[in-house]
Each structure stands twice: as structure tokens, then as C-alpha cells.
Length: 85
Image (cartoon, rainbow, N blue to C red; front, side):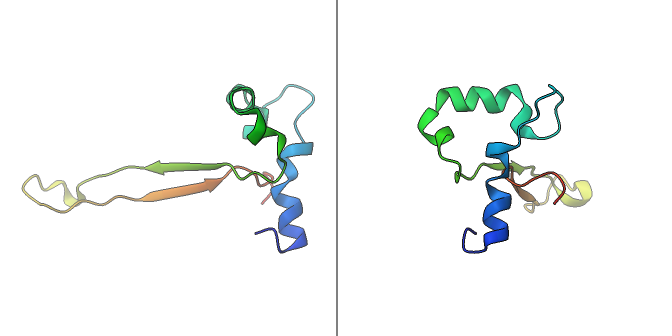
């Protein structure tokens, strides 16, 4: 990801573009982001870190109770990228 100069600049966006007016425009502006920075200062000090969010949800298609099949969509979000991408 960091081989491309444009992508590398976008991935470091969160390090220098935090909102200064107190409005939440990106996860970097949240209290949770600050708590993670306080808990893991060595990770937070590196501007090239990659923060990912993982979301899954299992469900049984067609609501068939006796079926052994289920679907598990998996969503992986890169929180480093700027909001306009």
C-alpha cells in the first residue's frame, strides 16, 4: 500500500488532518481514537500505522430453522483513509 506515493499520502492523512473545531467528521476525531492512542502510544506515534475495522454478522438464509447453512458477510474497513475516498 505504501509503494504508491498517492496511496501512502492518503494512508497518512489521519495523522495530520484531525478536526480542530471539535466536530466529528472522521473516526480520527472520536473519543475512542484518542483512547486507543493513550492505551497504545507506540502504535499511535507511528504515522504509517494501519487501523482496520472488522464487522461480521451470521444469518440463516430463507429463515430455515432445520438448515445447516448460514451466511457470514465480512466487512473490513480501513480507517486511515480520508473521508472523500
